[in-house]
Length: 485
Image (cartoon, rainbow, N blue to C red; front, side, top):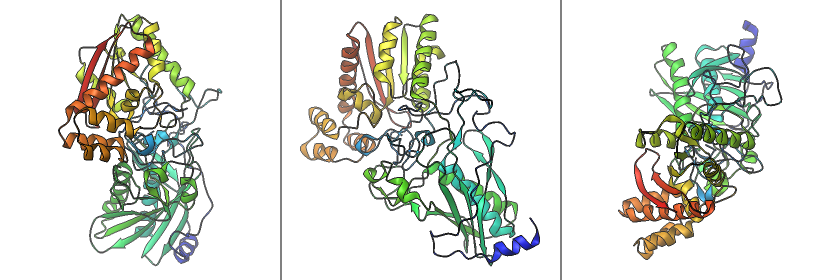
């Protein structure tokens, strides 16, 4: 960049916070190697949530909008008010679009089964889908760009950051502003790839300013929601920026400080100018995330994957397992629960583990058709409490968490009236888990498993053994049951 341009950038006015001057919008860059932003380096699919998205991320609690990886609001989790569930991430997808589930996401990874992937190549068959990037990744890139502009006085055209998915990606930047070395602004435009995400093309801005003390302070500005209810990964009163995006922002900015030997700290404020309007298309308001979207993503990438393609991959995985002589399958909703299930059932071969996403009834039916005689479901209480209610498609759009049902089961398990009423008024399934765990009521979780097993057997008309193991997000077993029908 020439000297004249640098000078102009240094004189640009910021205006009111959250009302930033916008430069020309640019699309985020593709992978440094020029490959379509679609494939993971190893060719694997990133987790997604069914409901038109392959289901992957799992969290038993997430902030709302769903953006899929890892957060407050977003897709990416299995637990949230009204049934939206975080499976490792806040939020989730809404029928009309929402912060994508894939963002969250994180855990939601498409099953490892073999077969065509969602984004096989750059070249262009109708089945080829282009990968995108989460709001968390975009926020980290914008923050790094603003930090570089503040520290060096030069506006970077692109920045590379490390993604939790295991590779670096270069993001194109825009909207550079700087004021006499006190603060700097940089932005990027979110590219969700071929994912129908409400935040696609949203402008993600970072305002970075010096602080007198070392360290990196992170907050949300205009268009980034505030958490007003308990039970989410971010504390009440905080900006809805999930833990993984916070870490990504901190690491990206710290890299700049270390590289240039800066002895001061930085304050980073993330803005999404259209975030408040976008949030109305998500479940954020119901989850108590007010004023904007959530900054989400546990992997940094959003991998499109259709519901039909996802279900086809589940059928293929079941078919392979049966062909290999397996009579027992372990069904999970995503990568995190599968990891814990594999440790529990280490004697079973890898093909016996199936990531079914939200498609419980669909997977059970095909397992029986293929001659499977025993199925064990392993996962988190937010999603599997819905199976206990009788739901066989457990995406939040189809089956919200019924807190009245959970209160009834709690009472049947010995909870007093006060505790039952507290459960009935809970905000998330994770909150219910905490309440019953603190009360030492293990029978509650066993009863949930029993209810779920009965409904599964009823769905398949018996002639099978069905078990369930409920776990926490860290893999601790809450309860288990098994019934032979």
